[in-house]
Image (cartoon, rainbow, N blue to C red; front, side, top):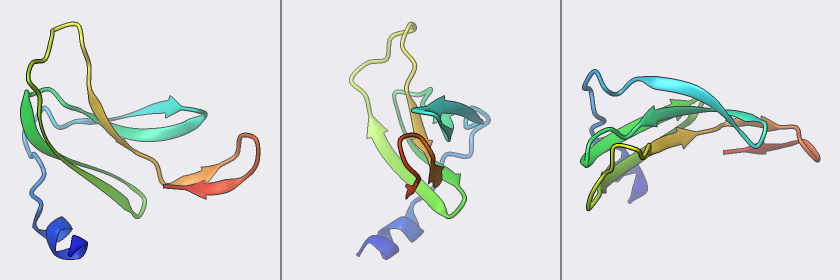
Length: 83
């Protein structure tokens, strides 16, 4: 039951959980950087929330990982709503 699971997920509330905006394929996504080797994160944009529970085997200092969400009108090569 996805609704029960999604309601029970606890997002990271640490100061490192700062959102930022960036463009991917001409759409402005909301991102949160995954700074730890393991964790639970949530990122939301409009009515869409994405949840991630993860564990990496290693994280190098020269690598950046992020969780992103987009909920809006995509207007490149047509117009359609994306989540």
